[in-house]
Length: 373
Image (cartoon, rainbow, N blue to C red; front, side, top):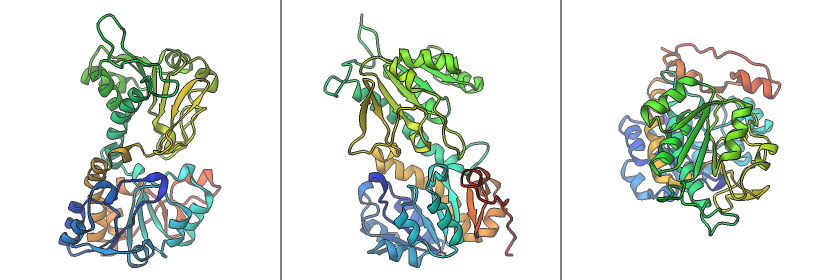
């Protein structure tokens, strides 16, 4: 199979879809890999490293798309990237179609693209590709919150996260106890913060107490407890994930108005619309804004801050799915992997994700594949 890796262009994305080790695995199995020049540069992978493992370095994104049967990328499609897709191509990416533009979905359907959304692939009741990025985002959310508490930040409260003898530490309140929330809680607790985690799944809260510390305060989430937590927080981390859906605003503007002057909101859910009403998309070059005296951080691709680690993590998590399709063909790979099927949003001109169909008023058709053996 011919596999293409374009350079990412959206929102200062610095990750690359496959590290050289992943490319080596594909080439060793007899497949061709076309990678756009400098696609790995921001993750400190050189073109020469990709050539050394057998990739063909090409000099335009158009050539990558034109020569490939399968495209592996990271960020959601831009209009320009959607236009470059070829008929009946296979696409792997974090698509986030629930908050995408309808013309992007229409293009996927009209070109009969098999679009596989990384964040929807399941395995053993987990999301293995998404999980690799969520582990990073959870840890970084705490570092980000800590940075914007400092005095040299506009509106910064001037608070040391871990406190000192006789001076209380920062209060870090985390909404959501999934992979992002778990890793954020662990990082914040290790920094000496006072940590409070809210979730409506008691099993997740119990996991935090059992695997990190019973000194972390866990609270059943509801509008009352969320409002109290938001008001108490020096750093508030929104860590809500809903499979393939837009996140509801669980933190209202009125709640934000009750927060301390200079408190920090890190809305990790922003790539699904955000769980805080006052959040909006920001970028790595302009990451924060102040609303109601509260510092808001709304960068959707947080793991790109550690692009090399993130690229290795993404490559490790995604390569088995790309290899499966390359080795066995699309139909056979899908038939043999129910979890991979769940990641398919469009297939040969049909919308195969019910949530996406409802959002964009499209006909929903269940995925039906047939063996090519």
